[in-house]
Amino acid sequence: MTLADFRASLGAAEPPPRLSLALAGLWWDAKGDWERAHACAQDQHDAAGSLVHGYLHRKEGDLSNAAYWYTRAGRPVAHGALDAEWEALAAELLAAAA
Image 1 (cartoon, helix red, strand yellow):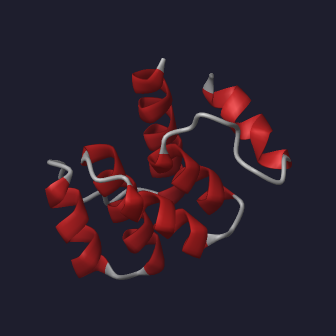
Image 2 (cartoon, rainbow, N blue to C red):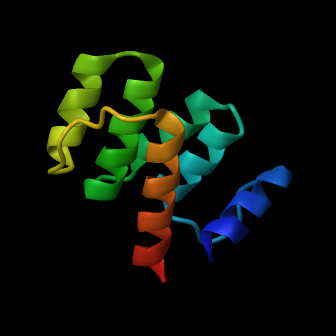
């Protein structure tokens, strides 16, 4: 799936099948459902889940919690625009799934 396909899928009521939980978290986040996005990220117990988890807490404004999850993912805390981070994360996770 390309990033364009992923973005196009946001018009649907449910995420595309076979997405990782981390990608499903980004999908739900883009739909405005932070709680579902968080549940997905929280249930993926690896670096990708931790990275999305960190992004979501940064978006929420809980920066200390975000820093914890970025560290668990082995990444520095992001400081750029949230939209740009979402796009970069989605592209990275889609490429890894290909």
